[in-house]
Amino acid sequence: MEDKFNQDFKSQKNISKHDKVRNILVSLLILGIGILIGFFIPHEQLNKVSESPRNDVSQSNSSNSNYVEAVKTLIKKRYYKPVDENNLDKGSIKGMLDSLNDPYTSYLDSKEAQSLNETISSSIVGIGITVMEKNKFLVVDSVIDGSPAKKAGIHAKDIIIKVDGKSVIGKQPTEATKLIRGEKGTKVLVTVKRGDQELNFNMVRNTIPIETVKSKMINSQIGLVSVSSFSNPTFDEFKKSIIKLRKEGATKLIIDMRGNPGGELKQALSLSSCFLKDGMPIMQVQGRKKSDLKIYRANKNYDQGFKVKEPSIVLIDGDSASAAEIFTAALKHNNVPVVGTTSFGKGTVQSVVALPDKAELKMTVAKWLTPDGNWINNHGVKPDYEVHYPDYTNIVLNDIKQPLKQGDVSNNIKSVQKGLIVLGFEPGNEKGIFDEKTSQAIRSFQSKREINVSGKIDESTIQEIIRSLSELAKKQDPMQKKAIEILQK
Image 1 (cartoon, rainbow, N blue to C red):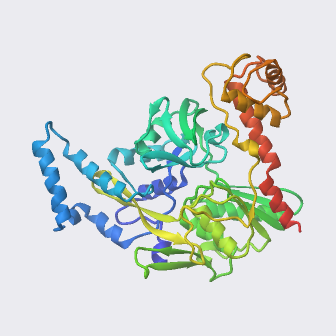
Image 2 (cartoon, helix red, strand yellow):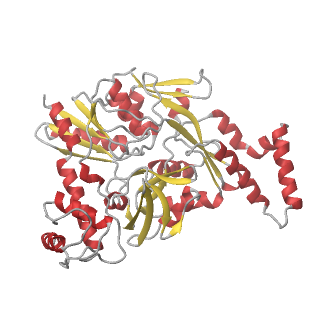
Image 3 (spheres, helix red, strand yellow):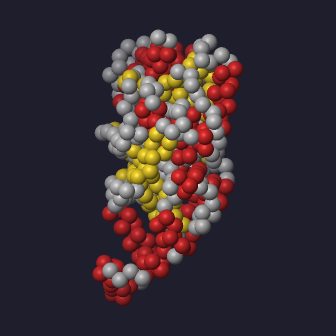
């Protein structure tokens, strides 16, 4: 299986080079609103089926197959109005996939597949979230750092219920993608359910950042490397970042995997291998049978002989998923400390198979395990040092249709008041009552931030409060501070 893995993202018999590029980008979740695919490994049975999937179905003599065909025939002949046979086929496929209760397995018809290809071939513009279908709801998997969604305050596990006022409940992720996508600079209103709250986020579509690795010196000794996702250039970007930091004097490293939704498996193996001695386990992949177990180990084929021996620490949070969890688990097994909160918990492997008529099937084909054989699915990787974000990062600031003014009372005003207190402006109360002191605090804030001084809570004021709280969180960053403390002992 080692040889098969090394051909992981090479052009396969049934998947063109263009499909390969699309698969990688989809797994990178940069469709503006992406579909979390995670990563792919080849699967012999899938390749055989994909060569002639219709023949495989037609040659089946099972009673179940005959039963399905009988129902289909009855519908075609006796249903009270004409039906589209293609829609019946799609419905049968969707029913089969729904019965798996797997949010990562789905069918893409030709239009949906074409939509993905068109997105990849054009500018990468959107709001920067990834979604999956769960119990007929669209759930946010992760939010890409620096994206409009991140700045607006959308969180992982938010349930998307509307886009521009149109319900998306029961829709496929690709259908929601069509609604959220658009031209750069245009607005989109996304309504989510978070606990008992229904929240509106009015965002401006923008180009989603595609640089996957950033680095900087924190102090004279410690370098910070932030990995936002795993794509084709990630290893090269990572290597260049480490070399650059070494030249700047870094002797210790913090590897930031927070908010990383995953991506290409081979890149995760390459980065992990840099921190391990050759031959040490990185991960295990378990197929349907117990005998279908493969252990991936550090070697030069992954890291090109480039090793990181500096003392290091990994940062994670609830948005660290898939390939980011593989990396974290591999380093944790090698006694590299992990700081933050428990990761997302995605422990399955997907493969995309080409079907007739330009349709595609994305299907879970295996599960991956940590080096010591643990399955982190729905559990995540637990940090060695649990450190949470500041409480004020949970403040919810909803978009408004009309400015809020003195005399109004609402939960949104309460959130604004809490934000103002954190930022050093005293609104007089935090009960959601818009009184004179609140108006004065808003005027003071607006003046300091050089925005229109009205004493009212308008859209620009809310966005500036969100931005200010985000900047404050980055500056305070208790997770990073804990990592520095550990490295300096």
